[in-house]
Image (cartoon, rainbow, N blue to C red; front, side, top):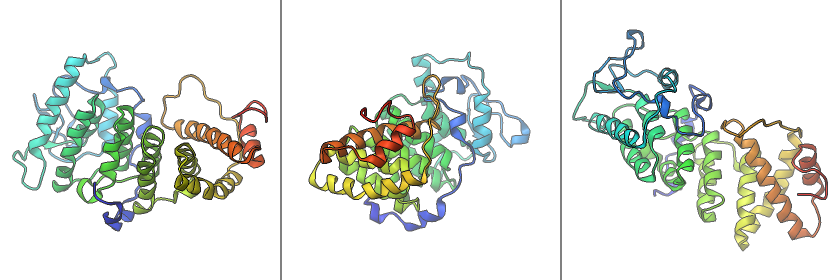
Length: 317
């Protein structure tokens, strides 16, 4: 993977607000019902050409917003079997491949942006995600760009399929893959790495905040909590030094955020809910680690967690 320091700092100019809140379009479960089994008819107003047997084709480039909304309207009754799912993935992959690059083998019909969304949603293995990653450089060479909404979908799918190192490779080499990193995507990347992977990978992900012009990890409560939790868990001399250095920053962040009890009904399926859940879990780990280290509870952290409904009583974690 290209070193983080080698990634061009022009990335700072690429931090844009996502065109669509992708969290409203996709649940944590794979949205099999978003994929049509046959060709994809489109209205003329969207500038999309109807191509029999060749889905996801376009004579122009509609935004991800239009494509994703149209896809989300497909009936949920159209569920794909595992075999059909693989066949559909391969069909889209084979359609997209020759249409990428500076000199594509096939120029028309063009690839629609929704093709990337469907590929990521259809992928169920690390090998399939790796194949998608291999196609990414050709999208930029074709004169196109990925947006923040797709980036957030991609990194979330990598975590769901237990292959966050693929996401780390992509974000660590912007010059090659041209995938922007939003704050939401950066948080997801940190979360996907901080428990089951070496601390070095988590620190690399944290370093990307500066490279992509995001707020520093120490300035974002969700990110700071996740990183501190990872450092305390790793418990090496260097990681503990980092965790303890972030304690004053965490205290300041909690002073700025008024504690409140968040009501979560039913299973947590929306990506919008997850940062709060991650923070709650990470603060619990930090609270325990500081207690073990100091032999007593840290008052400001204990009180904030109690007022936020994280703990039932001061004596509990």
